[in-house]
Length: 174
Image (cartoon, rainbow, N blue to C red; front, side, top):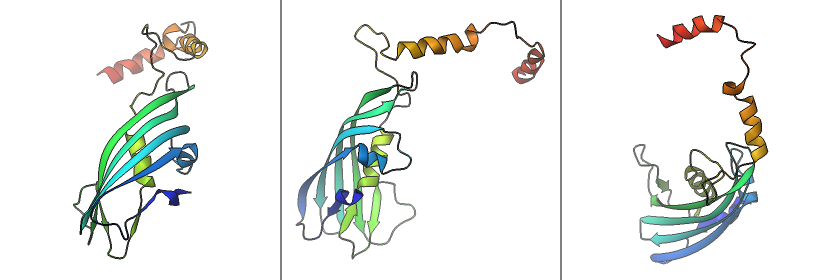
């Protein structure tokens, strides 16, 4: 399945070469740790080839389906990522940056699936919630928000209050 994300550079002349790929739900399902449920992502790779170095310029754009952190409903989230990956022939260096990959002399293909997966996930915001509408109101599932409000600690009744917790709170506040 991920073999279609191979870039073969055997026989390519020096200069620029463009490749296009597509990532959907099946792509993201291929990774065990994926947080993305579904997706429609276009990947454009501009490969700049020279004798000992290849530079892969990535443009990743599209939409993915994520679970809202607030109401747990799925919602569409746009993805827009630009990045570079450097492929060098030669021995690996422990102090090389993360965006440099060393290839041995007999390698003529490079699979970009892992890089695409990581780039999409690293471009996600920390807080993933439904966007607000044009009036600034949340578009989250209102039933779920009301249920969360009912169950929140601030709104719970205090008839089951245990004063022993006050003594423990004093310890943690010191």
